[in-house]
Length: 296
Ligand code: NDP
Image (cartoon, rainbow, N blue to C red; front, side, top):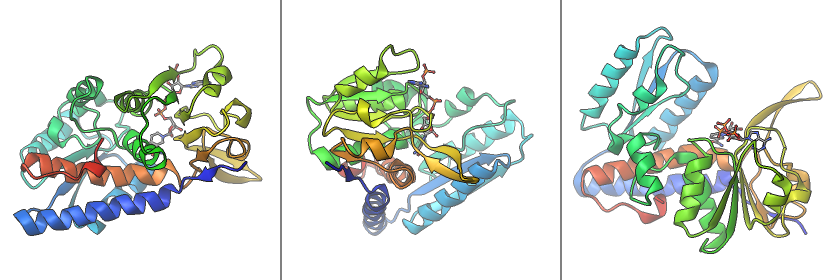
């Protein structure tokens, strides 16, 4: 048996297309253009690439993109002052502060200074609490992208056994909350989990968000399970750098029913969901109906 490969690139294109259509409707019906502000502190090369890509895709979806760049030694107060201005700017519906921040800046303080209704990353403590209690909120982009792919593949997730490997605040925990909200029976595994292969073998859905190259092997996976690989790991292969996931794709795709590749799986969905969250935030701020397929 060979698993269906879930094409995250193609799926992300359909999400971006939906966002574009929705943005066009918001413009024509209420004369508003959704806007996303991205704040970058410092010159981390990977962060610069992400920020450029976010800006380009935001504009391509018909939304306004605002970029704010601060030097690596900018003060915490300077960053908080920019966030306050963005919180009060009616043209800005989404605010994203690119992480990680330089060590002298308190990340929690910065995230929690963003207006929760503009917190398109879904990291503000209010959104974390709302998600934990099953209420409407801004949902973190990567788990939202995983959920969309799972719903698309399975239809209903109700009653399925899901194992999330990883308990980080940005992927593992919100992923588990979303699966629970969709009535899965959820297990969260982590570095202290006793017998990880045994835990994984019972799952209908496996979400791997570990950050360890190809740690999840094919013989851990139950026959026909759906495997979502969030991991992005750079490894050296024959003197070149290659990207691999947390799942050993070759062996896992022989037993799984469906699997996301790395690259081209979860990765492209993350920015697509950022755009979706920005459109959703604009709708909520202005009492406009939001497209259900773009939210959790
Ligand atoms: P973190 O490092 O914050 O969390 C990793 C989690 O994996 C922790 O909960 C840790 O457990 C657990 N873990 C580590 N080693 C093991 C092990 N041997 N067995 C079981 N569990 C283990 O990572 P993130 O959640 O931020 O990211 C995870 C991966 O996803 C990374 O590769 C990252 O690059 C990628 N990522 C991809 C995104 C995308 O857009 N596709 C977006 C965000 C992240 P413990 O808590 O006990 O230490």
